[in-house]
Length: 316
Image (cartoon, rainbow, N blue to C red; front, side, top):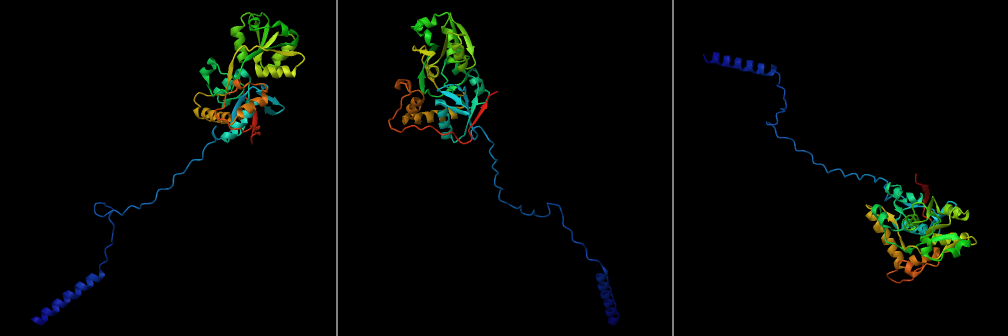
């Protein structure tokens, strides 16, 4: 009985082994169920360095645009293609102090403020007088010179004008530069005169010599220059009609440029360079007319050279 049982057990054992060898191995799969497997640790990488945008060319980086009416020697004028005069020296000095090339923007006097407000210029440096009406639209830097309005007449008529009362009560024709301080003066104080405006001072002086007007009202330095250029025929009537402070003008929101211009002017004051530059162009300027220096080192002024990249354009 036992031999039969053993044979039967061995037969079952061999049958099981044969079945195991013939069955395929089950495939191994990876579950995507996040609840059944731990997530792989996230890779931590150093943040990419922030890219600094290339600075756009701004007014601060670009040229310093100076609005001028180049018909007012010795303050500002042109000889050929070169801009000269006291304001030109100041403009080049300020440009050098700021590290910016200078571009002179030519425009008639009555368009100086519009050119500034329309962003065609950064600063007016054109023998510009401070007035209450101008202060409504622009901000003035510290004044550097005090001058006044005077009258130009034909030398043959000089004895006819003895004092200011004679001037203000005259019934003659008076030439002025349109939009100038002299223009405002004639319009408000010369109640009996006939005002005749011209685009530039040389035009008014030409009209004087042609007997189209009896006199021309302008500021003292330019009147003196015109008399020197026409010594035999044009005379300055030596009576100051006003007292005007001359200063540079910027837009009211341009505090940085105004501060920089005032700092440059203060440096000129402190080294007496301001007096030297003024007297270079206006030899008879009195010490009282020039903004006084606060400290007395004796450095002499030199004429600033034209800055690299200097240009002259016209405002449209």
